[in-house]
Length: 401
Ligand SMILES: *Cc1c(COP(=O)(O)O)cnc(C)c1O
Image (cartoon, rainbow, N blue to C red):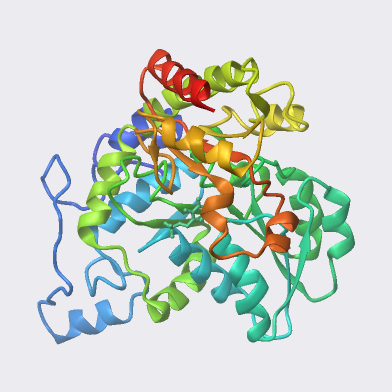
């Protein structure tokens, strides 16, 4: 399984991430291209009717119909399964495609789901609005409190959804502790690993059954593609795939190719981003105009010890509060010259958003309070720029507020 499919029998299990992202998929497509070819074909021919019948009857066939699979998908899947340490992976047209497909594949009417009070906004909508419409009960719990998960478990609990670190204050979930509660009861644990990336955190090593990603973020890494990944066992992948082909969140061959290109540099990008973010978080803590900095790598983060235990690096997402209110925060964000004011995260370029401004269109004031989003919050996605340039830009913008 983990042997490279050629006569040299290179054992991928012995290779480090930096090597895997470059070589894990060398032999997957069984063609002679060195750079991956883009199979821009919606369908694939069979040699004869018997072969067609065999293709049609093989789940996850890589060359039957692109909604079912595509050779470029195969290469991405191989690299991602190696990075997350799972048996296999599936790819989807977006991160939400991965999350919605996974949840809809695994729960039915009458089941109960436990999720966190803080999730990526569209995941929260699945929990708040979509699942109840289909007769699935959902309990939202405070993610920092393991006992809240324990108390929420019922006989019909089917799935627990985790996301760590989570917006907006980089709160951490004790993944291993939740798995310990779920395992003996046969509850499936799903974790959104987008913020950490597999370089900084491997939820499957902690016992998580399904690891989902918005590959639009760190995995792609250049703000040019939209994609999702589901990393899991062969057994669950096959179950999820049957729902996947009905939901139809298909990754285009071009975006799959771009994702593969992005993955080649994931470990070195994340290494730089980790270093930049830690330096920037410490720098921000020293600025008199800043009320508070939220970053799991800081000793001041309330769950720093847990973060050190379950993460290998602390990632590139920093939240901080500007002293003063909404207007001051708007002025600060507008004054930044280098860091661009845009949603999304995880790319080579630093992005900044005024958190309250991002969510006021979809949440009322009370929902924002419940979600813990004060009016003076800034979310910073640290890129790979030189740290001195990032610091200088922030310093000049702080003079303006
Ligand atoms: C962006 C994001 C998603 C959704 O991914 P898309 O690719 O935009 O569909 C899900 N979870 C997290 C944590 C994200 O940041």
